[in-house]
Image (cartoon, rainbow over all chains, first blue to last red):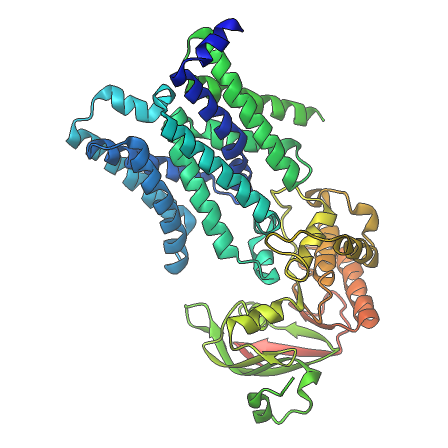
Length: 269
Length: 237
């Protein structure tokens, strides 16, 4: 315990811990949206677009996070808009963006001669490089996510239940969905920084999936996913510190364990 | 409310007696028109069956009436108000209850009472305004009306198709609508559930006197409509 307190006194470690905790408590609630709106393919595409953004950022000589932060929300809104305007199916749209982004990322990284360790950082994350500004960004996005659920609780609930029904009630479905896509895009971009492109699901998706196995309503699903997100991130952090392991991968392992346990428990009920 | 001028073209009497008026409406989704030059009137208080084969435009008529689809040509009035602007369409949506086809169990966990409460959206609560005690009382009252009071706390996904349709009917009725639109409400239900739902809708229509339009493939569910409108190839026969 003392060792942990001593470690948290180090600014780099403290920033990482706070960043993970806030992300776990807030961004994890978006998993409920992903599952309910069947956005599994979309979030996978956004991860690839994030890679392209990060690659573009590194190749152009500025931050990988900034590149992902700009490109992912833009792509998420673009996919929604283009899909509706040109009546392109969601699967075609995500397939196009996913493959194109991955190809673009590899080409950019190869062309710019980005060192292999930096490329590994994009895939696996580098949370110990989290600066104060990154922590502030995570906090701002976390507050935005919570506010969105507080302000538009019933509207989001209606859209997640049935988009056509929400339309018939007069809910501004397009605006609600665009807002959710924007938040999801920003969350994926930030999670890239925390746990890397390969482990974004540990924060964004798995806690929500576990929560939906227990929840009796929308509110309890959000609260449970937040609780599971905190356990995954804090638990992963402690495991990583205790056993000298990578933080992102440790959190992903705890998150997977929570989902596995929840599946076992709910199957036995 | 003053009479919309185009209604006079149809030489109809008291316009507030018409729940839905379509005058030479053409509408579609981009791949060509689904409705072509369609004119029809639904009178207030009627229980109307809208029949026709697949692709005849039955659902499109409902979408036009709800203001979800703006016609390429022609005029539409609902509850005496022409649907010319976005404000008109929003106005009318608040006064319509809509029951879709039987839906698959939702991925989102939601209790029956909460799903019915959503029907009050726009009527009493919306962004930043929370449902009131009165809303919740209305939900209880409406669930009793459709015989679902004891299932209020159950997860919607755990119900049978027939029970989910009753919940959908309650959600439409809790809006206290002046017009009830139903899109093939009995499709995918077994015969007993179909019969039960049809009797319930007919009883509620008699009891509440809400203008009700039911889109259906045929008469197999034993409906006793006041009037039927047959749509074929985008026009009424």
